[in-house]
Length: 153
Image (cartoon, rainbow, N blue to C red; front, side):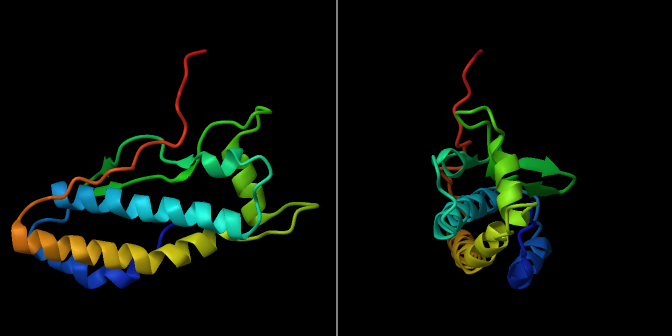
């Protein structure tokens, strides 16, 4: 739906590239850490916009799989996974609630979430990079999995 703005991290990314770390394990860990912050901001924004009816969509906000390598970069998708209890795809509900449609005013809740998460992501990644430069240790980032447990049908 939306693309996270990384303009506040330009200096950090330039430093990583200069040191040859823009596509290694540290870059992957940083994407995973950013995902944790952005996912939390999506949930907070959905709640702030009062988008909870059953909670299915908000509870389903997650990632479809591990951090992906695309060329020389890493990426991670974040969106509401799966279907709600009535069989409606959560990502469709999120899209309509964000952009609106006839009978539904747009809320732009994802844009708000991404804007709110930017300073948190920047602070976390800058701290991670500083720790890495000091210790040389790539951190392990938890809580990057999908919000929906898959079950066999």
